[in-house]
Image (tube, rainbow, N blue to C red):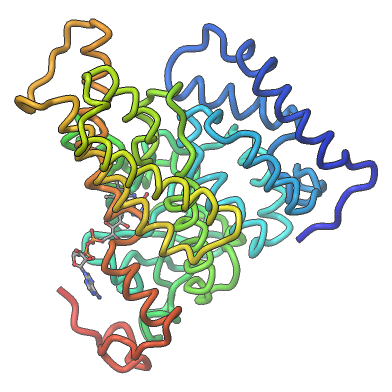
Length: 403
Ligand SMILES: Cc1cc2nc3c(=O)[nH]c(=O)nc-3n(C[C@H](O)[C@H](O)[C@H](O)COP(=O)(O)OP(=O)(O)OC[C@H]3O[C@@H](n4cnc5c(N)ncnc54)[C@H](O)[C@@H]3O)c2cc1C
């Protein structure tokens, strides 16, 4: 945590500044800006320039040097107002920046925090591989030191947003003789280079949110290691904790005013109430019961977001709420069949939006770690149950059975 700056505004003054930004400044700034990526970049630069992001980051690295009460005030005042396009920065601002802030060298902090917080750079997360998802420590992409550079070769998959990214937080194996958790290193990989090939994968929603990435002797400066060489498991787990907040409690708080396909959040309940009203179903007892259940879940999570909750509980909630909200939307929007029109009418736009979320919600139970892995985490780390059986922890990676 950084020292609070002198002459900081009071929390009440800060709240007024946040409200003024969303009420007065942001609509003007975004007026006429089209395209998800453009809108995302313009919004985040405006937020940064108004001094409303990086609140608990050191001022030396582009932050505001404020205490956690300011971040809490920002979250309350901005609830439901943050443009959905901001999800482009979910990995950069939500996961990579806090990990670099907490574990990076001064060089990395100086080079990456300011442009990352301002949204000048887009980041992706290169963890998963074809043979390493839930068993992340089984990753086999290798990095070898060659003079002043690391040379990286391997394959990553499911890499969200890699097609838009300048940098990746990359996990690679740097010691094949060490046990699997001890030979991994976290790097910053420049994505836009000859040795990196990004191929978008089209999902059933029709969007290509994630990619497969082929890495063939890509180069990384020697000093672009986050934390210690072979100490990457520690930083990897720290980043995953940010990811589970990001994909859990942080996904509470959409509003009926935002109908974007960006982001992986449950359909906000007030949008479902509007849908039920539009389809004359508000008096239907089954619909009322479903809406009440969803509203209760969203409200309780809103409270827990303020008080704090284990990240895996937030992540599991998102999956369960996301599916239940999508089921209600499917019943209300498509009672007769799964077909929807695309004639550009308001109703067709409405249907297209709900169809997207009905298809997209399935992926919520995988991205950021599957439901089973969240339950394992809660069982082993929160409840203290015995660990899963597996090979001896000291076995060198190269001797482990692999498929
Ligand atoms: C929309 C989306 C976005 C993603 N974005 C990224 C990204 O940006 N970067 C990135 O690195 N990865 C990303 N991922 C990958 C994601 O982290 C993995 O899909 C996830 O960790 C599961 O890995 P896997 O797909 O290899 O499945 P597997 O690990 O092969 O799991 C298959 C099934 O087995 C179950 N299983 C596995 N191990 C156990 C166990 N020990 N106990 C009980 N059940 C178990 C799983 O729960 C699952 O049901 C994304 C995935 C999705 C769907």
